[in-house]
Amino acid sequence: MKRVLVLAAAAALIVSGGSARASGNACPTSNPPNELVLAGGSGQQAQLGKQFTQNLQVALANTNGCSLTGSLAGVTINFDAPGSGPSGIFAGSGSREAYVGTDSQGVATAPPFTANYTVGNYTVDAHSDYGTVELSLSNTANGLAASITATATTDQKATVDGSYAQPLQARVTDASGNPVQGANVMFAILPGTTGASASFAGGEPSATTDSNGLATSPPLVANGVPGRFTATASTAGVPTVATYALDNRATTTTLQTISTHDSKATVGTRYRSSLQARLSDANGQPLEGATVTFAIAAADNGAAATFLGGASQATALTDANGLATAPPLVADKTAGSFTATATALGGQPGQYTLENLAAAPAGIAVGAANGESTTIGTRFAIPLAVSVTDKNGNPVAGATVTFAAPVKGATGRFTVSRRHTKKTRVRTSRLVRVHTNGKGIAVAPSFTANAAVGGYAVTATVKGSSVQTAFSLLNLPRG
Image (tube, rainbow, N blue to C red; front, side):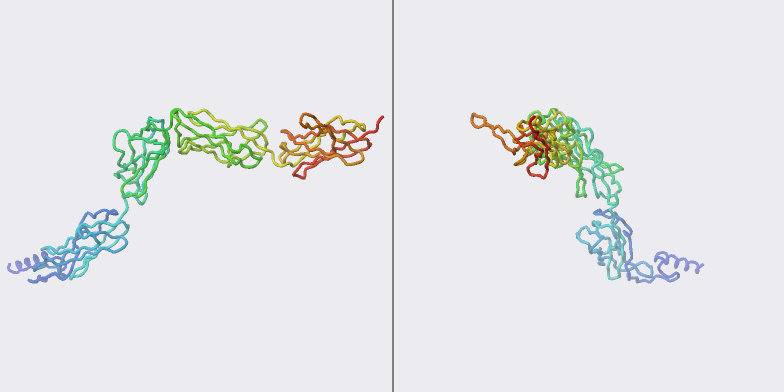
């Protein structure tokens, strides 16, 4: 019976001393610490900038596993986090290090520890005279707002003093692109240069994201000033904002076309001036951000133009002065006049008159007088006439054509009438210069055969070019 009591007492000592002590050995009467062991807080994860939920703890111990004896309080423990990369800051010291004394049980508890803004795994070392312990920690960006983007309708229009069709909506995601629930999103209005703005109906312009990371603003109501303005959505921890383009539209508008400085262009080339229109509200105030549509109407003969890129229609937004400028215009290959229009919601259309000019002379053709004959000393019945065209077959207006008869032999003379002061003087010349009309036709004055019988040629040349032709004529004898 005595032997059983001794064994039971030894077993009780082993249990109280811990499993590290060799089985069957009694704990010493004096058992001071000789090592430092982990007590708690290792293996935690915290979001960037957030505090770890559990404090870091270490404790004094003896390798024999027995209960410690003596005074255990006041032993200095240095908790030391990494100086770069993933790490954190201890409360109180405001640094990556903290010095803590053990309590009466030999346990040292570090101050609250907050993760820094670098993702990753790391260790915090606890140093003491009894050795070092490593505590494993991890900083994560999961579930932490990293970006905010505008969703749904990001570009809306509403009539002044009216409601916008859709509220503003923003999505908040973390660094991995996952939605963040419970983030507070603030919506704000930035008035435009005209004073155009809006207000949120029914309370504060803020909302909390749902399980999909979406936050929706209260309804939006336009103020009474036409024009464009913007709205933003922001959330804590994200340096960028989501933006929305909004436009208060006037109920009545006036569209005024602006005369182009150069309303003519050579076929196949760009017009030097773009079409412009100014849009204003009923009070004459310029409307910013309104859409003006410019369109080309081809003439019956096909004369037209296209906007740079080949389209016959283009849109432009008005600026702070209510001015909309169309893209550059390129004339097509057909000469002639045509029109363009500008239209905007609520305003009467405006109209422009444009003209494609023929290119340089590239061809000349003789008229019906070619091969004509007449008796010497008499006038040819059909006037000498030519038509001048460019490389695309367009008639060239205003070209100078020189008609020239031979100097001697069978030839003839042109009759030229000139008004001098109040008298008209008539003279004859073997050479005359005539300008082509709008149809590209130049008609020479009447031509009379001289007294010599025979055939000859009258040439027609175009000034500034190598284009030329000739009429074959014949002076016949009398009788």
